[in-house]
Length: 295
Image: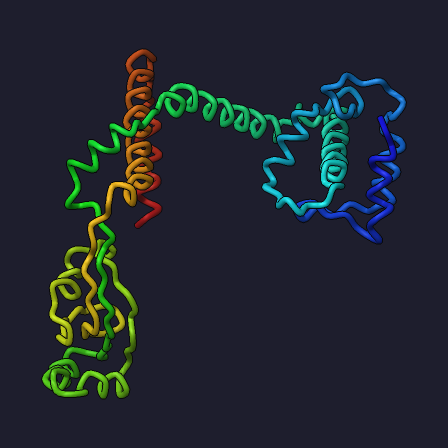
């Protein structure tokens, strides 16, 4: 191992070398570099060996790649990242020597982590890797839903919040008069709501915003903080998207839908071929305890 690679870091930085928020004291970097078994002859695919563990060149390259560094990143990044990996490996080695993996409180966490990793790997192989959305799939979906695929329209509105129904009955007739809404906003609570896009509000509320002529006062909507009225100041209709504009979104949607369908089919196949026993008595006791706690 060539210690000069590591010492070059110390030559050009005064205090700390930082990689993704991790600070490396330079004295420690230099010490690690000189004491990390530099006289060993390692295979070409191994960039460092820490105790009994090896750090492969591929692992180091993968770690650097995952950082998505700009092209202007310093040339010392590989050595900085390697030193961080060496630190982590030293800690892992020490944890093994301490026998921490056998501690009862950690054993379950390790098993849970193992199960999570294996679940993710299985779902990837049985579901994710089998999904392929073709251009023909995207085109067929676009042709079928052409009139539904659009940039949603929006309205710009102002709202007025009146404290109670009695006040609303008294003020509402004045809201339709010239500048009546603006005057009421100064006296009571209210102001611009901003843009409200189609499809972003529940249907029972959408009728107060969409299909309403500009300048019209709509409402009321009774909420906890009072009686709400709205005035539509601007209305911009939605526009249909071209195939090229919609392609990426359709692909993402179809991929997600296919994954969900295939995942459910795979899960159903496992349920069909695996014996599952449920202790209804114990489950009932838990359900009863949960219901009692909510009262």
